[in-house]
Length: 166
Image 1 (spheres, rainbow, N blue to C red):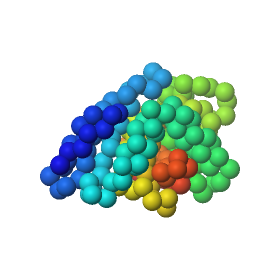
Image 2 (image 1 turned 120 degrees about the vertical axis):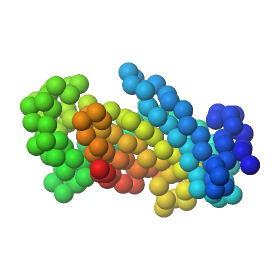
Image 3 (image 1 turned 135 degrees about the vertical axis):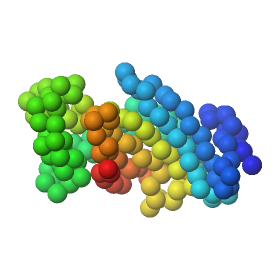
């Protein structure tokens, strides 16, 4: 059965008994795909749907927190963020400079500032404090690479992981 929410409107039920809702929102000068997905509608507490709505309404602030978490990872050579940057510096070479929105001379920070937020996925059925509630997927050049840098948040809004995919 679909559910109705003040922010989301109707959240459709999937064939497998989950929930699905999607929209595109504008953030700064880019369009971001936002999804709400749950595998099991019965496992979705009402507060989690409200928390998902609050997260989407505060997307700019969460984007800033995600980027701060990425910058904090630069101090570790083994971090997902550093690996992502190194891979793209090697792969794109001089053409990377054309993708940078900022060019301060600190290539790592400039890459992080230039990342595009592609997609935000919120999973309201993962509302326990030790679960990933929302993921933010970033790319330096979605047309040229499948590599994604993902920042995960828990239901409280704390960053719990940074990983690369692709």
